[in-house]
Length: 281
Image (cartoon, rainbow, N blue to C red; front, top):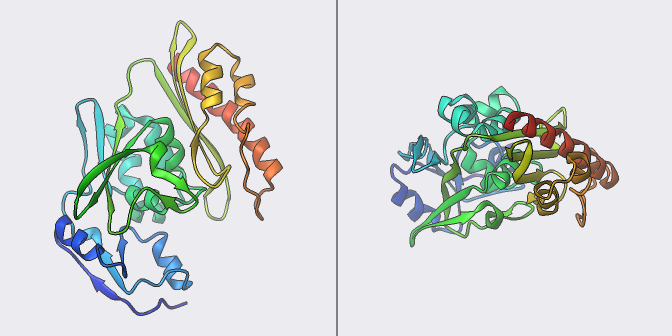
């Protein structure tokens, strides 16, 4: 199908882009992997499309004060293949490598992906486990929110009207930290039917820190705090994983029923925890 007519705008600076996005009829374009199909299907019809690819400074990946700073326009392939990310925050590189196909990973961006907030996207699970911080800019300035605050509901985030995701910040992993991202994917799209990110620290074989992020199971990614508490209290990984879906209203669709998703969540949580624990040891 053909998209509704729109004006195509190409700002050359972040302030210019933010001024353009202050117009309620304007929509930001990053990689276009979600927005363009929606426009073709007439599910989105912005009057103005603000292409961010000419804005400098949004593609960098750097290390600063014990954290990795990743520009919103860094592509999935940039993150997957970055030596810095693979060495200092392997969980994020793992998640990027699981996204879609080669074409999607070469065009799609981390900022565009998390701003879209698809409930089956891969990054949210990793960012929840990493306790990431997302920087959001608007004409009034820039603010930082945690991943837990950023993902609000299905296709809903903390980004307000006229605002833009500009950076994602994740910790440089300390020695003794093991991570893993495991997912059951929908073969046609590559989206997660269920995906679990595990981040563990182990001392003398005992788990001293556990962070578990989940995607695909419900309408929004989340931290599995109950599983984390069980792991940190010495529970067996299999037993802890069984609690991952406690109190969760699971999605049900043509790809998987709610009951099947709940089963998959337990299975993939156990896989992710075992793999992360092996890496930590």
